[in-house]
Amino acid sequence: MGFYGPEPFDTAEATYVWTGLGAPGFFSVNVKGHAPNFTSGIQLVRDPHFVGGLAIDVMGWTGPLAKGTTPYAVHGSFNGLYLPKILIVGQNKRLLIDVKEIPFTTDEAYVKHVTAARRLEPA
Image 1 (tube, rainbow, N blue to C red):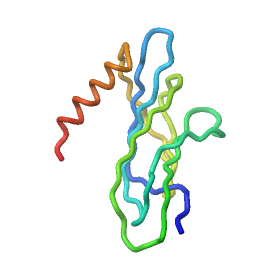
Image 2: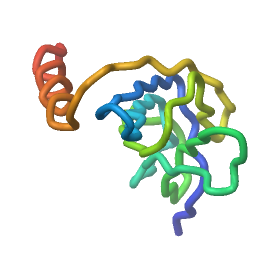
Image 3: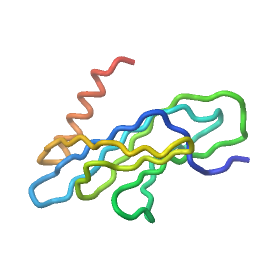
Image 4: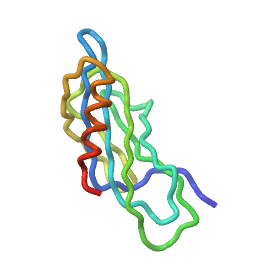
């Protein structure tokens, strides 16, 4: 039987996308790591009880437990006002990361930018 809980991660990066003058933007967060074998449903979840900023938990379903790990990459978007740093929390560590900024006037412009960048990444 599986259980839902924090997953280990290796790297995390965040970008804040400005969506217009006087409007809040959103954080685009990417996390990579190696989860225990038989882990599924890995997602980034905003910690609703964290005070003083933004904390993102790396969560997933694991089980049955087995030897070895499997690499994963997960992405999440979170609305909010700009913060220069956010906290990523996993099973193996708590990491305060710097947030990059991208000034876009619309969400659609950012989606086009990300889509074009992903096509250029080597497989």
